[in-house]
Length: 98
Length: 485
Image (cartoon, rainbow over all chains, first blue to last red; front, side, top):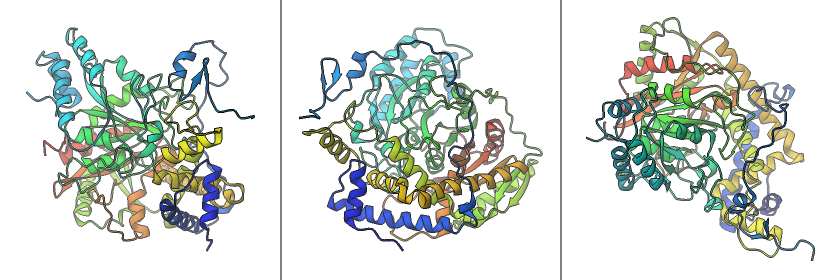
C-alpha cells in the first residue's frame, strides 16, 4: 500500500495555493488513506481498465454556434463592487515585477 | 389562522378566497424564522420580502399562477442579486452577486417571494449539514439537537420541515436534496441533468450538479418542476428538450414496471424500514405496478461511493480555483499576488473541503490521473451502463433513500461495512447517469421520518412524479412538518 508523508501532502496543498496547518494534517492523512482504499475498491471491478471514460452523463445540444449578439451584462462599476482592492477602475494587486 | 403549514395549493386558495394576504403570510413566516432554533438561515431577505408582499397585497390575485405571493427559501449557493451569497464558506463571506440565479429569477417573475438564504455544507460539499461556516444546522424533528438534518441542502430542508415555508430551492450533486428530504419527511426532487438551468449556481462538480427543490407533497413538486424546467440561453448545458405537462398526473400506475436492485434492498438492517419498504412494494403491486427484483454486479455497486468521491473532489478542486480573493471574496492581506491567494484560500476554506481539494489535486496529477481520476470515470461509465440497462426494461428503480432515520451528529466512530456504505450512498447513481430522482416520505420511526426514492429515465420526470403520487396516497404522509406530526 502506498504511503505519503506530511511533506508530500504539504506540497500537494501548495500546488493549489493552500497551507495545511499542523492540526489539519491528521484529517488530511486519514483522507488520503481513504482515497487509496477507494482506488483499491475500484480495481476490483472486472475489466475496468479496458473501459472508456465517462465525462458527462449525456450530450446536450448547445447554443455555442449561434450568431454573436452584443449585450451588456454587468457594468465595470458593478463588477468592481466586489473587488477586494480597486484602483482607477481596475482590480489592484501588489506589484509583480519589482 | 396560521398559514405557515399550508402547502402551495392551499396558500393559493387562501389568497383567491381573500382569506389572507401575502403581507400577513410573510409576517407569520418571518416571525417563525426568527424564533427557529435550528440554525438554518444564512442571510435574511426580510426587507425585500415585506416590500414585495405589501405591493402584492394591493394587487389582484393571479388566478392561474399558483406561486403568486408564495414565500420560499433559497440555498445559499444560488446567487441572489444584491443579497450576500456565501456558499456556506468564509471565503465568500462578503460576496454580493450581481445577478439572480435563473431559478430565482423565474420564481420572482411569477411573484413568489424570496424570504431568506439557507445554510449548507461548505460550498455544497458534505452530506451532514455540519460543515458550513455558520456551524451545525439541526434536524427540526429532533428537539435535543443530537441528530443531523442531512446535507448539503441543510437549511432548505430544515426550513420546509420546521413548518416555515411550503418550498425551498436546493442543489444535488450526490444526494444533497434527496437524503435530507428523507431525514425530514419531505419530497425532494433532483431533475434530469440539464433539465433546470444552473446559471447562478456555485459549481461544485459540473458533471454531477443539478438544481432542485424540497416541497411538502408531490403535486407541489410537479408544479415547481413545470415552472423551473426549460432551456436557458445563459446555461449552454441546459437542455432544449420540450418540458412535459408534469401537473397532468393522477397516480394511476397499472402496468408501470418497477425495479428493485436486490443487492441494495438486501442491505437494509433497520427492521422498521424493512417492514415499511416491503409493505410499500406490496402496495405498489396492488395498484397494478409490476415489481421486478433485478441484480447488478456487486463490485460495481460497491464502486459507487469511491467513484463519487474521486470525481466530485477532482472537479471541485478545478471548479473552485477561481476562489482566490483577487476579483471578489474575503481577501487576506499579503505582499505578493501569491501571498494573497494562498492566505485567502488557507484562511477562507474549512478543514473538510481543504482535504477534498488536496485529494482532488492528487487525483488529477499526471502521475496519478490514470490510476485514480480516469479509473473513476471508467467506473462511472460502467455503473451508468448497468443502471440504464435496468431502465431499458423497467420504468423506475425503487429503493430506500437512507439506511434509517437521521444519524447522530457525533458519530460512534465505528467503521462502516461495504454494505452500509452502499445503502447510504447509492443515490449518487442518478447523478452519474444524469437521471431524475425523487425522495418522498415512507414511514416514521420514533417520530422521525425515513424516505424512499424513485429514479427514472432521463427526461421522464412525469413517470417519476406519477408513481410518487401513487405511493403518497398510500402512505398518507403528505404535507408533513414537525408541527403537523
